[in-house]
Length: 161
Length: 177
Image (cartoon, chains in turn brown, cyan):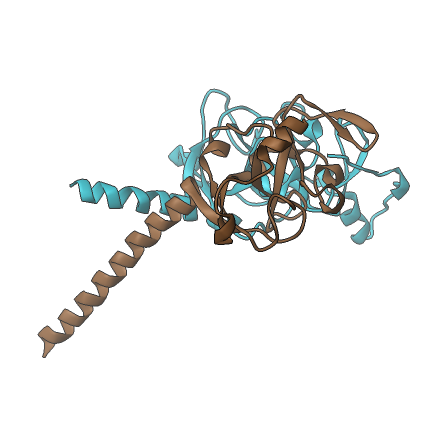
């Protein structure tokens, strides 16, 4: 009788141990390697539409390998609970146009703009953003399945520049 | 053996990432609370757990990613939260109203600290952990209490306390960055 109870407890402990192990592995992967993000809002149209799911990697922000033209996920400077998805259009030291003014992005900061210039709250509103707020770089779109692959207008944007 | 490592490392990293870790404090910017004698470094426990909801109080000691250099972590004290009006010490405008989602951080060692008086209000999202206690050397083992220096209390709080507040609000400049 006792033996049976011990066996059941042991089995449950074993299951709990596996859950902790795989939970930790999942946490590390999502935190340090990459994760999936559902984008909401119109600010990145026509590159990313609302409700698109994109794959992001967290390695380039960690090693400071962000370049102009990258689409990134960052914590909003206005509210740390929210994340924003924008394109990096200027790095520290670059000159950027903000309306009629030209300003220089300070060191350690980036200039973020949405591709949908008319409907985007970005650096033109809240100024340059510290690079430390960047959480991930968008790699490709995974949903909708029909648009799977590279984020388009990437090259176009660079040529445009 | 290999399996133990493959499982142990993620568990360890997750633990550190969720609960906190011990870090060495360098520099004199937080004297006298930390590193009271130059040359001897304190080790503090940085609690990730208490920073998970981004709720901080004025006076808390926090570690944050430097806004000037994302590869560097700095430890400072939070002086003012969003909406507060602070009298600055050598920033470009004399009074600053802290913008939404930002806070004002300063080192305790006024004049020897690279803090908000130099780079302006910082985004709360840059804060990574809260320093909760000194763990080494053993004779300095203590909790770090959140205390705000009297002369650095934000001006809007002074007003609430019934003391005179003789600044003109129109003089406050909304900081640009």
